[in-house]
Length: 88
Image 1 (tube, rainbow, N blue to C red):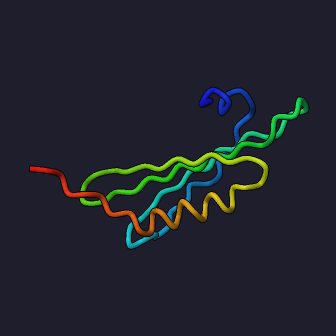
Image 2 (image 1 turned 120 degrees about the vertical axis):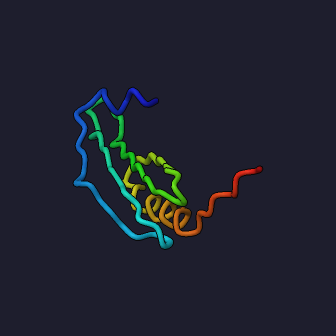
């Protein structure tokens, strides 16, 4: 639920830029801490890239320390992403 992101204090990482698959990728990380009522830490990674004049985004969400694996999978996807040519 997207409202969870605003339900708890959110920490945002410094803006990250990387070269992935020959494209510059901008990443923002938002995180909510675990709570005393048993809700685990949540991490959202937002990736943005521009290819051929169009902006593409990918959002991931992970919990319980799985962020490193989810981030690696997202970066693997981005390294091979090639948008389809528009139909004319």
